[in-house]
Image (cartoon, rainbow, N blue to C red; front, side):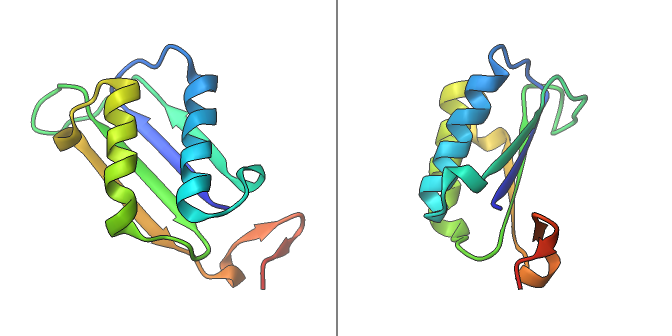
Length: 110
């Protein structure tokens, strides 16, 4: 926790590098250790968003530490810079998850 899931219609050439960079970004934005950030990417997804131009959907889940109004711009800028997807073709979903509903190392966080 936090967890970020990136789905995009674009092809990502260096997935490992992108995953590490987005984990570092999310870690800094949530003030949580990079050690606990899990990141996943699905590229070349068949997506429709007012046509078939490149688009991206990001799901970000965390136990607290989410501030969508402050996080949306740096995350969108990152996706635009690293993946070339226009900011108006990016959706981000933020979800603050209860500690009792998130488990790691065989037990929940509460």
